[in-house]
Length: 182
Image (tube, rainbow, N blue to C red):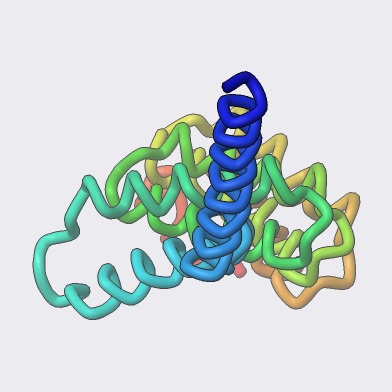
């Protein structure tokens, strides 16, 4: 009787082990995407949806989801070349929904942590622009613009930044007088 009971127990265990191996294999086959691929797909879907509805009022929930997923991607995969691009686009979306502090932080992250990214100068410029034009924080705007000229003096935006620095904080009347004097 003990032999039969032992055989039944061993057979049952073998069946359970085989089933668990089969189940885990089929789960892998059903879900072959990596975490990175899923995140890339989710970001792309959010971007596509926001672009498709660009003519309508922006969906703040989708915009915030896109911003958060972009930040998550950059945090989890900081060395990936997509990280600064996602952060840059998320910064623009943040400006679009009026989340200016978020935008400033996203642009700052790019020019500080992704110095070799081709749009790092643009990110620093946009940080200053956001401070100046959306937050009316001229002091921080000047700091960003000065930093821009120190780091990227030959950039295509450098001449514009110089003009902005000469005129930042001036009233429209002062600007007109300045242009008349030149």
